[in-house]
Length: 131
Image (cartoon, rainbow, N blue to C red; front, side):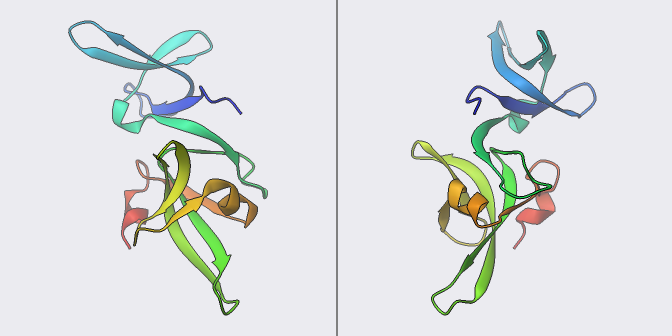
C-alpha cells in the first residue's frame, strides 16, 4: 500500500494523474500531483487518496480511491443476495464505503472480499449517485 498515493484531474486537459499530493501556498493555493518528479496542477475538488484496499477479482485488481463509487454485495438474513451503491470516503479515521441511499457504512476490505465492483467515481459519473 502506498498511503501517500493520490489522484486528481489535471487542470489543463481533465485527465487523471496519480502521484504524491503537494500544496504550494502563496497568495493562492496551488494543488498539484507529482508525476515522475514533475508537479501537475490538478482540480482540488477531484483529489482523492488511495485507500490501500484492492479489489480482489479481475479485471478490477486495483486500489479503491476516495470518491470511487462501488457496488457492494452481501447476503441478507434470508440468504438473498443484495447490492448497494456506495461511495468510498474517510470517516472517523478509516476508509469505508458509505451508502448513497441510507446511513449504512461498510468495510472496504469486506466489500472487496465479497466481489465488490468499481463502477466509477463521483467526478466522472455523478449520475451514479442518484438513487
